[in-house]
Image (cartoon, rainbow, N blue to C red; front, side, top):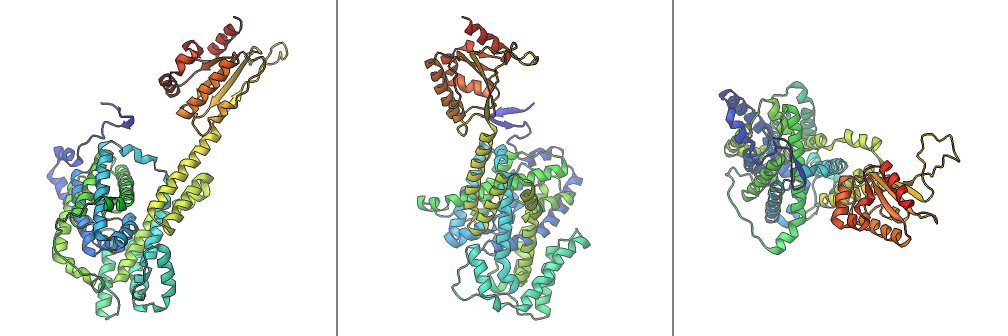
Length: 561
């Protein structure tokens, strides 16, 4: 079965609405099961400290991070459209979640996450997976770098062991920076020492071994330092209540007012989850030479986020680092993701109380590395050096707005700016040029030029005709002796309603002045728009010619009548 069209969206036959788990089970073997189990255990070990760290960065308790990895990770692996995707809490959501929790509490976060999940399911059912590619790369790069900066700023307090006065408000990034500067005199040298050693381990350990995650080693070393040396450093247990209870079902209260308040956050979570999860799938595909099912993946992301919220978790999406770790350790089916979630349940029940011993500077160091790995500073720098000015404006604007304000504003303004600048660029590319009239008696050396009657004018249009450049049609001038005009449209791929209206007005001018309007080589989309508008009947089918030579010959006949 070949490619097909579904409601105007290109879709490959491989992108069917069927979980990849069911497809992979057809030829599953005991050997692959053993490999998937080992990979799932290793990924769970990697996910443990990351889930805790990202939950704390999101302004919730450490167990919420584990709940997310368990519930969302299981559901997304079960229903997902990728063979190897590992889902859970990610850094991209940290600042968004922290802002929602500070503004609306856990109830508001749950409601926003459920709404986001519903949006994701709808996006998948409407086959919108392929449309995510229309989010400009400059916007994703800009807000990803901005999120990385906000994560770093948010962890400065714990890394340096600073103490803030009671009642200090630090929701916005600018507030956090200002508060860090004002209270830097409260720096705890022991906290800084633990943080620096943890950071050094995270940087050096991958060069020593790639089997055991550096974050786990950093956590163990941090705990030993604080306990054995009796250092006065805050740990997770000092700031949070640790629970090893299994996640329980809780339905948030719904109301029109509450939904209206969290709707913008829900939309942002849904878009970000879609972008990050599908990007992770694309990266995974390139590593295992496979093809994911983007629409099924969106449905799975929606189900996973709804489930996470209902069982005490936070927003989740596909995690590129954990997915890559799964692939490197031999995971090739969703079974590895399911095993990863099951192992985390055992960790939650048995080992979670020991999470209280993890020093906060170690958590900060882990998040510093997460921020560094996600910031893409090389890509950011490369775009600033090589991209067109309009793209650089979108990139920098999105980055600054993410840091100074929030991701919602950054995406909204970034998209609006990208669209406006794109339309400006397209309007600059679109042009209407008139042919120079050629008379062989006046210029015998112009052997390659087609002679035109003096009463005929030919205008060649290039580029899309849309509202950004529709005025160019109105600017076409008539000569006093002009009796026929040819509009050559072979270079026009698309025509919108505003440009169609301009053509109608131009045709009225032609009729008023007794000028015959002839079209040459009108492409499929513009022809369809003209036909739907009734313009072809108005102008006359005989005035639409397949190519320029035919149009000139026809115009010559009209002039001699």
